[in-house]
Image (tube, rainbow, N blue to C red; front, side, top):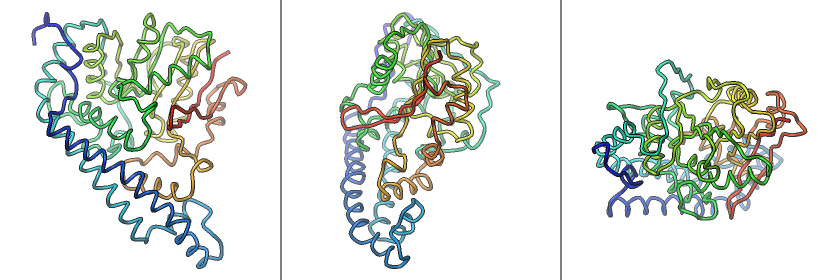
Length: 379
């Protein structure tokens, strides 16, 4: 594609053909059946049969995640649920890979043209000196084959295509689509709305989206605050490339940076609004503290930190859900999930330097979905 050609969003999109779409829709429906119908049956069985059986054997009903796991792990319905969940994840990645394999050469050519032409005026900065520590760098989050970092060709964006191909499929299958919208930046729009409610006086000159992944949610911040300098930060290079190409193809001037959210290299007190979406439960509990300290360092006085993540804290979900989440942690590419939800986030924020009178760790809902929000303002 020549540099003087006009680009469209579709030129760089994940675009399954008719048969690929049909297969992916089937898998989405299959996963939704598992997540709702099969899990609902398991919920009923836990309450009616498994918890009473555990109480009869141990003298008390299950009261912790560990005890709930012991109550269900040998049950045929739980084992059926786990097998279906595991294999539906395999089917999902196989299905999106078919589309990616068909379009990858064209999309890399388009990425190079977008990178060189910069039609929207954004930028991409890659850092060869960046070292991502294990276990983050060695984990296949969501069991995405090869993890986020796999590169098999020059200027590779394969993992970005694969990831974006599953996002709405995965979110809708879990009942987590904000407002039921299929817009790519729906969650980003929601985060911006929450930010405007919590800090109505704030008009950010600079926005930082940490762990931005494929960058599609970052688009919302440029749309809401078009005059702001918006930066998307991500430590997986194929995703950084894909994020840059997607923003340029959509006409949005966003700067993408390959960097560690715990050590960004950005100046002190240089950002008005710092956010992330579903990042913290995909890193270690130890790094959570490092990232929060970096947020406080970067935040301007009067600025806002607002992170969104999963709401699966023990006090909010029943024991059977804790047991199925435990299985996800051990077998389905969510190894950091438990560590995250067991943190006292207000204590973590305070330890990182946030003023407890201006910090928060609570919940916001969008339609049927509820999310955990934490952060604060710098006085």
